[in-house]
Image 1 (spheres, rainbow, N blue to C red):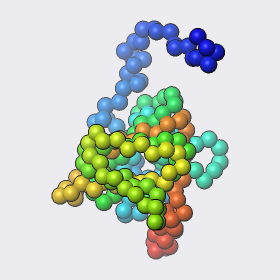
Image 2: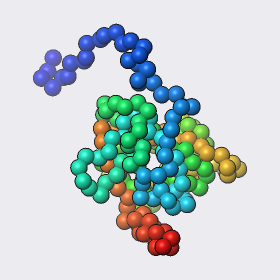
Image 3: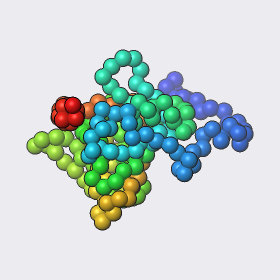
Image 4: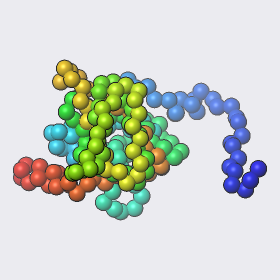
Length: 188
């Protein structure tokens, strides 16, 4: 075995009460529609549900937890093992503004049809995906998603979100922050 190879943990018996802390039933999950810079914008209304991880970013900075401050405090499964898993639930026409992460972010629709977009301006691109399709964005790629399910304007659909790291960071693009500022000025 090379010096770089990591030993696997020794197999042990896990009691049911130990494993129960690592089980989350969808029907019992609780989320939040607050906690991100774009949360109050009508086009961004969405519930984010923290299932695994999403600790707040370390230290003081402009960066936020990808699922928002509220959700970073309430994971259903409170572990930190190198990845984070959550859901987004929203109606058609809703989704976040363009943003970036310091790690990989992968989307997989559970229900409905979703548009995943990346880049802004002349370099804008998008792809439409449905249940069990997967889109994986690398760090440094501005991205967003939006529920585009047709003929169901009042049905909230669900998107699975997986983000690498133990305390991933998110930041919105300059164009997104301009939209947030415009909205806040109109509310004042």
